[in-house]
Amino acid sequence: MLKNEKAVVVFSGGQDSTTCLFWALRTFAEVQAVTFDYGQRHKLEIDCAREIAAELGVKHTVLDMSLLNQLAPNALTRDDIDITHEEGELPSTFVEGRNLLFLSFAAILAKTSGARHIVTGVCETDFSGYPDCRDTFVKSLDVTLNLAMDYPFVIHTPLMWLDKAETWALADQLDAFDFVRERTLTCYNGVIGDGCGECPACQLRRAGLDKYVGERQATV
Ligand SMILES: [Zn+2]
Image (cartoon, rainbow, N blue to C red; front, side, top):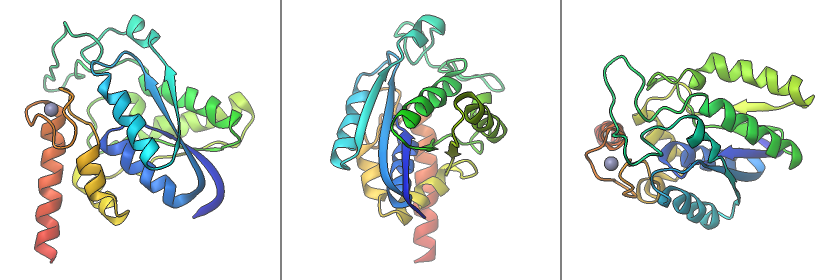
């Protein structure tokens, strides 16, 4: 536990980053959240993040990253592009370099807030082809940020080696299972909680949830 330390959580209002927010609240003395507004298909995502941060009493900053849409038009930000995910290819929701940019901006916010810890929900286990979500990239960026700002940043990735079922287990350990299940938004169609059930994000979330709930029942 790092009870004298401050942290900034990269926060989207989804399952993963909300679990990370609960983890950070258990780990650090002071926690704030940062959400990036890059013209998401559903503004609801930002509202959802705002509501969760307010409910948990966490200072919340929304940064305008709409330039991402200008650089990398894609299915998350453009209604006229369908969400597809062909085997072996990057999903059409991919924004090139997104995580690199988000973590860099989070670091600037962290340093100006006197925080040296940055928490992100990136994960290599359910690796969907995002090169800047890999552990080796995050470690490399950590070094780069330290050099860039001459500041001892530590990037934390509590979900890096967890699968979706284990992420649910972590939420449960943090007494946040129901909160994460009911209040977070993962669905590409903007349906909070269990979602639309149809889109790739809902299917991934549901598969992990079913696996975890099944395992939990098996151990009772
Ligand atoms: Zn959905």
